[in-house]
Length: 448
Image (cartoon, rainbow, N blue to C red; front, top):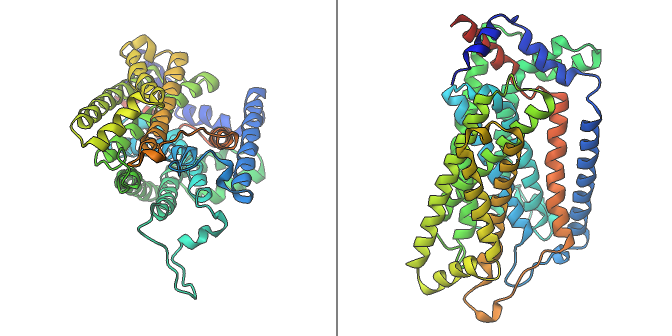
């Protein structure tokens, strides 16, 4: 993907340090404006709401939620699966761009990796609190206990625990390894002694030597290679948590493909949303240019078409399934929670069709709305799968309805506040665009 000739001519006349200066001024600026401060205050307030909801679950119990028989899971599992899908979609897309050395990585990889990490942090809240006795979470570790009580590795809760730990480590490494050269740049440009020392510690003695770059590129690619099978395994593991049960609409081998496709779509939607927001708020049109936005929009559109194929395939499979699975699938599409299913189709399949228009793909406001709509649509998909899927079991005497309570909404909204607060702090104190990659790409363009 190349830049327009006019931009290339402009870049050829710019000094080599212009990208570093323009991007570094954002985290090194002494004043970031009242809009950022107001957004951070609102996000932190939502984090306190999350802390209150978690405190209720820990000290009062999960009875404050709307779960009952047969709804042993509700918003807790819905939110966990949704956040994991967002994290996997962002990290998978970033890792592929690193391995292919695609020029789009310069514009989006840094904040895509950050969003993946923050989404994993949000997802990690839910497996602990829906254990029932969250203060005993350390039982998940295979530590040498006196009574020889070991974790039950056939339990999906154990799968969740190890999946979150592994995902957090690999995603952190992908984000941090790519950040090291820019931390050194901030170390050299920071004016205060305290900032210089902090950046120096995390820059690990980076001196931008050929030897350092060789090790860095090798490490970056190795971590990116590790991300791809990890993401596929984790998404499949989440799907198997449903598939290993005997619930009619969950006991399906189609679920791993469903989770992988929809998770990638939600990740692309979140990246599109963040890219449009950063272009608008930080005036980064030069680094996240129209061609980048155009390509992200096309990729999201293509993924929406694949999702449409997956949903159509699920309908076809349901028609030829046994009576129990067919009844459960039809209930999800036409029953009490049919609005969730068709809301998913509308938001994650139909709304992205506007991206066929180039004017829509290049409009930051419309890109924000499309990214938000698709992300909400995938959340409705997870809620539909969890709630409507479990509503019709084999015993009609167990057919009931589910309504989320206020503490469950607090958990959901608080987790959104958590990722918003983490992202705002990231944008404020670290470079949201890779300075080293930008300098490298612009140097190559100036020589061509």
